[in-house]
Length: 349
Image (cartoon, rainbow, N blue to C red; front, top):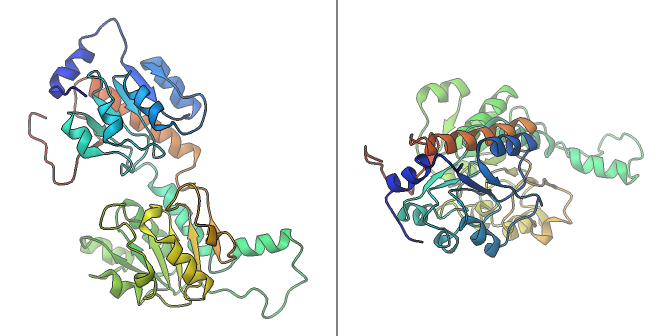
């Protein structure tokens, strides 16, 4: 891709009074979002709700001013290199950007944005639903009912664990982790957390939250682990055979963040041999397929990546994309710009 200064790219869009910006979308979006995009821009929509191949991504990014991918797209350096000099913005439909080579985009003077904040509450709701349902074996009970395996109540039938009074460990106390903590506190769980930095004392007091300087120290004390950290080189396989061995045999794991944070083979091994009581997963290491060994386990809830799958969240994600695009083409700072780690913008950027 031939690079040019960001201001030059913007001027080509802003000064073009006869043609609307060309926007390429990689996945089927909610009807209302697509309709609004069509009103504002010259948009190329993905009518077939399937993932684009790498060749299709390259073809799409080569013919647009603004590129709108999703978490299912691998926007690596090769895809970015296929972009024409017209491209100036990658407006991601989603909060996570680990599927985008942000450093390569920045090197090519491309602005990258995401949609933070709007999926926080919905993802926290799903995490809390799993925290409540796994210890009580709710999904397992549903399966047994449908299979005709319930013969009536018994004193020892399908015993689970009480949630109130248990210790919840939160890995990653960002927006979603904090939202999970608020819910857990309301349900009477004791909140523990491990984060790169300690949260403000006012938040700790409000949630009666206990900070652990090391992940290992927290894992040994908790009853339930909720993973809410971003995927980075340092968090990939952070939960593996070694760290799982630190957890108590009657403890539970919930992951609504990124599948690659958990070594699923090690998790399946621990669950199958009683070294962990149960797990709830909404994301997978080899997405969209869970590790085959997990499929035969009754003590696992497997959700199809529905953490943010509400009508409200998807609509608000679309609105965020539109706001970032409009800000960019109007030569304003994008409110949700994403930069490579350690990068700072100059006042002129």
